[in-house]
Image (cartoon, helix red, strand yellow):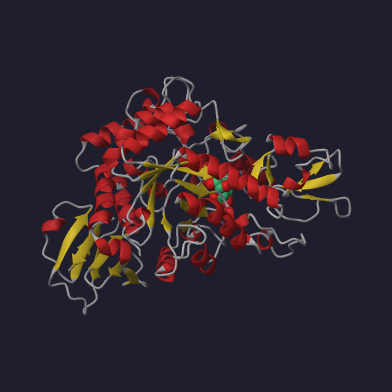
Length: 555
Ligand code: TEU
């Protein structure tokens, strides 16, 4: 069963077009720029590209605020450019996955423009409107970007819901016309030959209809994995995804294992696979993003254990460390100075040897780091700028707030891809929309391609290994050192193969013992981030160097 789907042995590369490559001098990446890098991506060995939104948008949230689902954002190019990208990618054997954002639209979308201020508009019921309660917002729900989640429509006196920015109005999925529109949008792109879809915050589309206040939290319990979400997804899958054979990946906010087993169930009724974010909260103090705390290593391993074991034979995970909303992993869980190369390779190994489909976010494959900005002027992300003012208001010092942003801001991963050591890292001939990270003269693609020991070639090996070693796809998962404070060591097993993935997560040397009952007689090392390991005799006792990782295969 597991082998008939191409995506179960595939690796997917995420492109954030605005920051990928500018073929001209606008300072913003474009589709032509992507086309110019397809050979590079082919060399890396990826199977598909996920493009974050490229549709028309006022770009309040960099394209996650769509004003026209049927046209390309002129900043990125035109429909001919997109068709050409699709054609050339397909010729090279690379599939294209588009981002579908249908929890909300931009308030500049013509549906919203017609609905705003007009209770009689045929589109009024495409959105969620409520009367004020005690002359205030209908509920105390919070926007994910800070502040109340309701905005007043002055003319009608009603409020509309926006779980994100006030320029991103939530669609009313209870309305069957909305669901039909969604099917039409997806069909339009599938008809063009698009291979799959990433569904933005798709587990938030079904809201509990009584719109209560949340006295315990921010309101998320009333719309996360909501009452009709599975029904809606099955309806869309049935009508479009299954018809076109599209691969689908759902972005699931604050979800649970049981929900994800159903979203990605092996009968294919809903989605192919799911992103969840629990492992990326291992460095949140009390579950709060806008805090700074060293990551909780035992917690991180226990979350992976929960999900890897829980999804086995039930669903399918999208594996990832990085995306356009998360800080760079090498800065976050590794070491972005002395051990940048070692730790980037180790982190990649520890996630790529798990069960699921790995996603590589642009620049991750060369070990790009957070830019370590020091001034608010350097940031562009609306969430970061909102939070800057909110945290200052809460009484934090500017220094403290900037230190938090430097760790947590979404702009950390949105800096332009570092292609070479020329001005602007070869990203654009103009002025980049967001400042390039200062280390681009050492950390860049050109350098990585020249160096046989680079992070790039290591990712290339990981991607190839997934296709060669079956147990990576089908094996079960056991943590062999759950309580160890420094080593992450897990086993993947099938009837014919056992793979052991050993990772030192710290810069200290460590002695580590493999379980005494593990039969290592036929074992051989197939990958490591240190030289010479592949020729080592396999023993139970290991002396691991800073951030050392080893993959042991026993057949
Ligand atoms: O993100 C959804 C989401 O909940 C987050 O990862 C979000 O960025 C975070 O909670 C903020 O702290 C998706 C997109 O990936 C993101 O870029 C969009 O801004 C968001 O949806 C709205 O469309």
